[in-house]
Length: 339
Image (tube, rainbow, N blue to C red):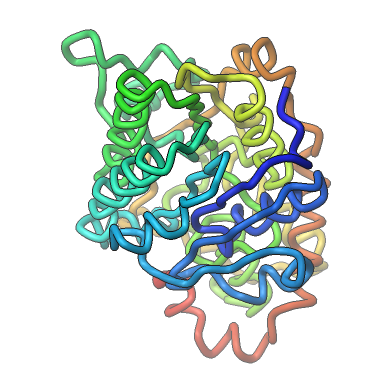
């Protein structure tokens, strides 16, 4: 068991949506926290609540000198830094996503040189084979294999990069005996997320009163939208309980359609468009995705605490309080496609 009050912790990408919530959790547990971020998508405002209690280092973790500097004197690394976005972003910017492979290895190598005790890697459900996600089949960790021919078939370049990040971390564990853990995150959402991701994109369109209201695909594609605080708790529990780089899923088991989310948003806003336009030419990814969380329940004693309804209400309340309607309406297309 880790006593976080005695830990010196680095959170890469700590000013990001998920990273900033994790930083707050760790500060609450008494950890001495350092954030490393280039602020290409993360925002300093995300750290406002704990800014006076943490150290912030701004720089590019693909720069070895910077990576060595920020991993120095650290016990635990939570590695969340990555070039990523929602479905539109990862489909349109594959080369950007490919840079994550070099980023991950520079962070791992720097951590090893500085004798970091443990690394927890924020991976993704995009590591799972896409061909098994056309029907409703809950994804189990062993559906990805590095030992069997054809055991990997990840989701776009972003998914392959995350998968290589997992394999690289396992190699560093094997060679340097670093305690390592991997959390495959399933469709996180919550306050501070940007509009390139599905939940916030839908909220932005409704807030701007887009009419006809545009939904990518037919709206019947499903995801297991998981509230950010459940994700950050899984990351901390993985660091505490797993040392051998065994991956665990963090997601809800429920299949949630885009249409269901849209209906909930309309109800909360007490507004509906006159027409819904289904844009079947847009990238939507796999048809169905939900997590089997048996391993997380057994190894971490983790299961989601927030219902979808609670999470959506919290997120929409945050969005309405932190976004100007006129700005969102005027910049909607840019917000939906850029990090």
